[in-house]
Amino acid sequence: MAIAMYMVLLYSCVHGMQAFSFDSLTIILFILGLVAYLLSMLLVHWTAQENDLTQKSTYTIVLFAGASLVLSDAMISPRILWAHLFVLLGIKNILAVHNQKKVKSVILNASLWIAMASVAYFWSILFMGVVYIGILYFCPKDYRNWMIPIVAVCTVYILSTVGMLWINDSFFYLQQYVAPISFDYTHLWEYSQLIPMVVVGVSSVIFAMISVTQFSKKTAKTKPMFAMVFVQLLIAWSIVLLAPNKNTASCLFATAPLAIMGTAFLENYRNRLVKEISLWAMIIVPLFLYVLL
Image (tube, rainbow, N blue to C red; front, side, top):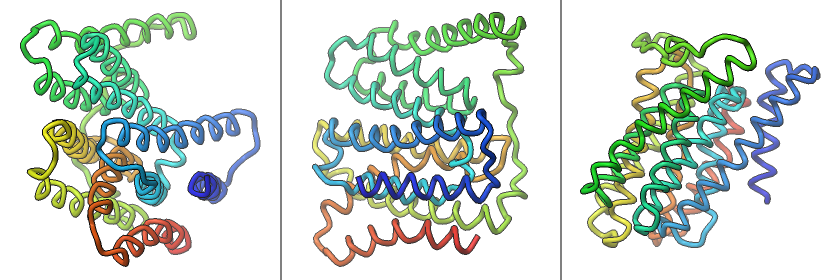
């Protein structure tokens, strides 16, 4: 509860610093973004524990809150927040494939969520890679499983077109859906962009390296799922490199796998002082950056 209140407070502060206006549309977008953000926090925690990726601790929540709150651009982008939530719902579903129950239904659900995320933010479509990794690990022999994500993307695109025809009396053209690629990183070198990205980037590299070195110690059940979390992190940073809007908002996709990997490390690390310093750092750093930037 304390972390949730902390997230609400800093989320509100970010919007306050952006000259928040009290018209109805702005308030609705503010609330919708906050709902998506808090649900994402709960979903990361639930997914990690449900699949035995972490133990019964709150480290995941603290790490996710700290890593995400340094990304002020993400906090003021409802499209990114909702795309992130849909991606997490897709990841949660595909991690459940290991149970071998209703496999096709699970793959379809995961694919539909990620396809919906791509409508809000196109490059989140790359997380279909995690779906295919799940199929490769758990159910590669049935060729129909490999076709399900394509069917899901086509379904969401058709439904989006129907929605556009109903609302705007126009088609949802492919060029409206597919976003361009940009390799212009000039904006990311600005002070306000570079520091938050370095914080999340360095944390991602450290926890990813630790996760790789400890991979052999994982159980046979959790190894495929940790591999999928690692792929999720790689895809998240690929989006940062490819996305046309070069700001730290797209770094939000890296915060969930970062939190899971970081939690797995801290729970097994015996030095209590290091744990305390790490957790307090994740709480204090966002506050420090808001004052500094």
